[in-house]
Image (tube, rainbow, N blue to C red; front, side, top):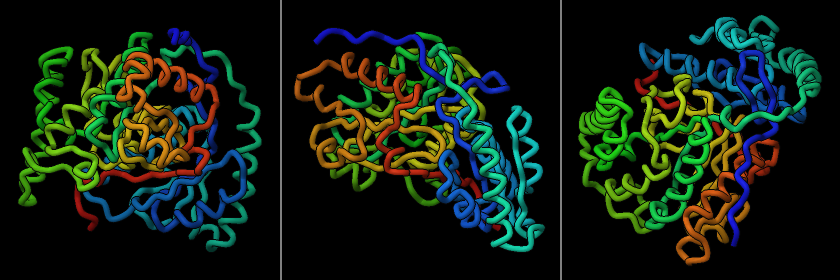
Length: 392
């Protein structure tokens, strides 16, 4: 089998702030859980619109409030979003008008409706659908233009892993990441709990001493948090699903997990949902929970997520396409409606890691230009924010 042509461009949507989208969503963004159902009702049946189900927005304290607000702003400012309708209740902690003002700084059109000011749910839905149709009509005038692949920000994730994830899907994903980074793009390695036992390897890849030290710090913070709850997770077993897939320890999973980031230097370590601006490969300090980790990277600016799995998963994202890669052919055949690429061919000897990496890269460019992923076809509009403090 011959080598694939490595594309240099995709067809994307330029934004006023200089970023580039691979999708052109009009986002209905509830500022609090109390307005989430109404937001979905507003978006229902309007092609081009997508609504988050946001279970947050009130009762947050300290750093947790700032993380929640930063994530919600990041979803609205993501390049894949053309414009935003913020829907609030009116008494929540995350103030709808302040949320809208932060998103407007990127040059996007942002409208606001507050249910208590609109005299209830029915009036809010009626007015919201009128506003949303106007936003969608405006968004429909946007056109894709050729864009260099160096404008892409790619997030990486793995979930429902098995013993082959670190041998096939993750290294192949790493090859695709190396191609993106080599062409000037940006990539994010996530899931801090899945660095445990391999953090020394990542620390050595730090572009400088500070990056290496920060990598070690975030891993220690996760372990300290677990110990504060009476659990020492180093040397422990991974999740039941990962154990069924053949993984035996956290360290074994971690050594496979970090292959997702390829081989380049780690240039920066970002907090959860922090805007990713540094070139090349970076780490984002996220949870190991798939949806919360993906949401953090997308809030940080990722336009596309690469997601490896050994067991199969339907996970997606409300505004960013998620490309699913199976580590074995059995998982691919078992959940074929969820998985885009089968990396089990590496185990079978039919393809090399580099060949599958090039296939992932090729599909990534096609998805950036508009091809829908399996998760998008299924309508997997998942969203959740990683919490660090209890709701008060």
